[in-house]
Image (tube, rainbow, N blue to C red; front, top):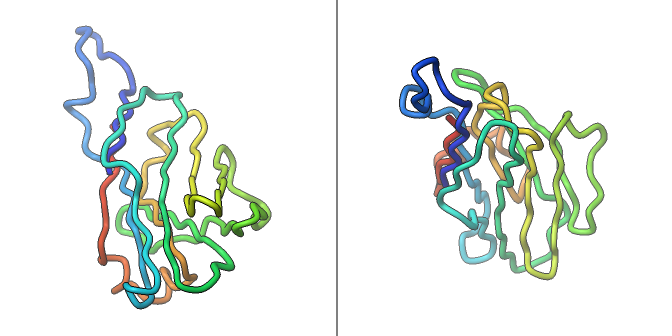
Length: 151
């Protein structure tokens, strides 16, 4: 999925978006049996201006109950970092990083990561997962992923 954040205009008045490398990605991690558990993004592309809120959404399906839903962040050339988990009832780990929030709708099986006032400094890969194994099993990071871009 793609999110494009336009940081503004350069001195010539042209948009700077064409000259900046992709900075955001959102990857989906499905650790279990693909027939039993699935998680996938709800959109493929968004365009926002710097300072706008960005919502990264995943829908999930599972054969059993989901105890926790996980969000991770990875900077270029770094290992994924755990951000927080959220339960289907909406309880979160404490503290949730600044200007990030999350919500879950267990009836529709959707979880959202909301980045308030998006800035270029938020640029990273963001992962949603049904299991807490993203940092323990790097091979899983490359299963069924979609890209989100922030310029």
